[in-house]
Image 1 (cartoon, rainbow, N blue to C red):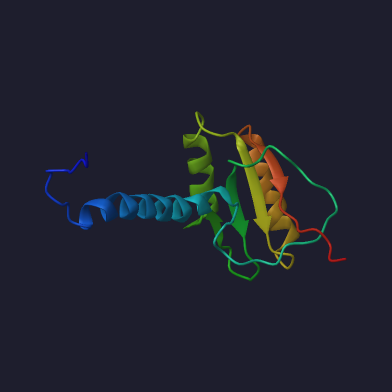
Image 2 (image 1 turned 180 degrees about the vertical axis):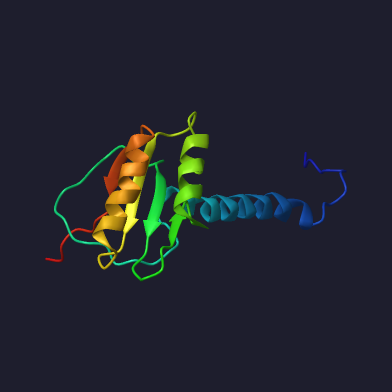
Length: 134
């Protein structure tokens, strides 16, 4: 005895919607996944070093670009030295680590000044470098 279905035929769209949903979820995941990479958004050429430091994945990034103008960025937002001090003070409850992403040509005194501000406020400070080319 041959069994036959008496249900109406479903449209093909019914089967493609879950597939599209899965593709969109993967697309959103990969778009948001870029936040796990530590990048400041401001291009600077950092000095070279063989050392590696762990534990600074979610640290704040303070960028000091080269140039005569006293410009710096806190987590990608342009700020002044006074504003930086206030932002670091306001973030007492958050992550207490900072990476200073300074250009190789940046003023050494300026880089140390920014590091001292973070150290005074109780932050652990690391200086960003790149591994030497082999």
